[in-house]
Image 1 (tube, rainbow, N blue to C red):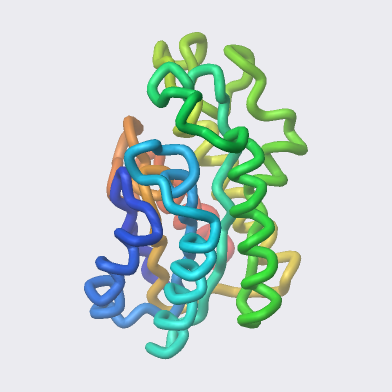
Image 2 (cartoon, rainbow, N blue to C red):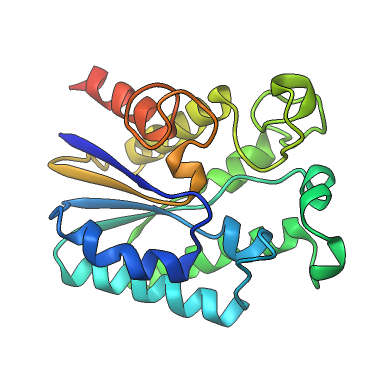
Length: 216
């Protein structure tokens, strides 16, 4: 099994549709698709709910037409206190958590309608009471990383995502094989951690590769 990191910081669903032909040139057997954070939280990249829904389904269909299986991965939660230091709260017609809950619901519906797999990272973060402003260790904050971030995971957070994905795959009796592409934005890329943009170091694709290789 080979895992590739195809995350790029700042990408939304529109950007992923543009990049998809390049990703499909890799002839993946599996595509792990985590997207929605920028569509919903980055005021420079906002798309409407309907556009997100259409773009997501288009991504799924294009990947499947090219013979790869899709695993949808819901994005993690957000610390709105820090988010609003970078993005004006007046630009948000709905609360950030509500917007991410839409992404989760949309992925759930697409999973059922399109017959693809789903890993609910968003719910796993909620179950762990994340975010806990300046107290949790999974999302970058001033206390755990000296970063007033609120969106991007810490190394511990990326490891948590990888563990959730691996466990969910086990629960669904799903075994990845062949070439696996992790496709997404900065959370797939692994912004500000060791090995960003690769499957080495502290990115979620790196931790997932490590976990799955230990099972082989």
